[in-house]
Length: 205
Image (cartoon, rainbow, N blue to C red; front, side):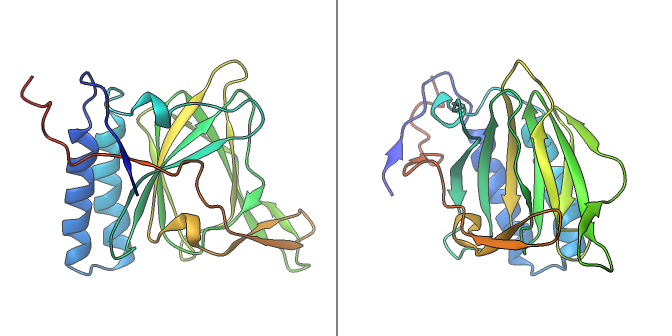
């Protein structure tokens, strides 16, 4: 893919450092619990600073939330995505099929977990969780993989950084109706270009 050069004021080294550190964790072939624990710590450090995401990957859409690819591991072990939510926007109930980490960078989100009942319906599992900027949560088929996420703010854009254990835009997964009816989908991405996190030319300025 071609790249977009970030403006000189950006701090894209934060994303590069995150990608490098997470790749080192995965190089050791840890179990999922360790990935979520150590990856969650790394993601919390990344979203603690809201000065690095280029504006091109923070643009909302009036009709639909945006899913911008920021990095895809060459072996497709993980991907990093910025989710940009316009006021009041939400996902359908959906799954992921792989482990995932969600860190709120800007604004706030509401995540509602769902579980399938004995009758096959998807029902809310526990209370909805409000995630503020800087907070991180995890999903996976092992710990709970079906949820619905929405922008907690009715008048502002919210942005979260998602990390998945696959090239999530190419993963076949499903959305669900409350009655349990599944609709397969492959999400793709809202962008066709990637930020150039490996360009160090402006870091000495």
